[in-house]
Length: 134
Image (cartoon, rainbow, N blue to C red; front, side, top):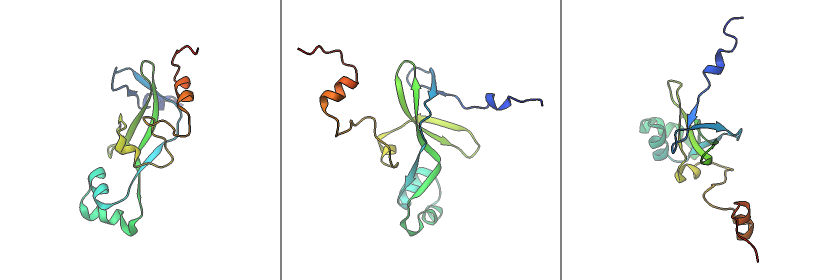
């Protein structure tokens, strides 16, 4: 059984965009992106208008199975959300997630906007601000 552990070396490695240290996957689910209209599909996927209109038939959203948001961990910067995309040649590329990417997913919570149902006090305490209470 030669080359039994060959797949380990083929695992993609991602690096922090700020410090170039290795990022570690946190086991979070993949939140695939979806696109609503023809212009959005054409722009994001880089296809012709004819193909984009074919994909957007019946005004149903097109789910891009090759692009998703995933949570990673950097030892220096903590958790980082990355937009991961698998290109046609099989190469996987990760870039930091933008606010426009969060609008194209479902059931995800934008980490830049705090949960409105949590009080300001609870939010501060969960972040570990070392303020002394009098």
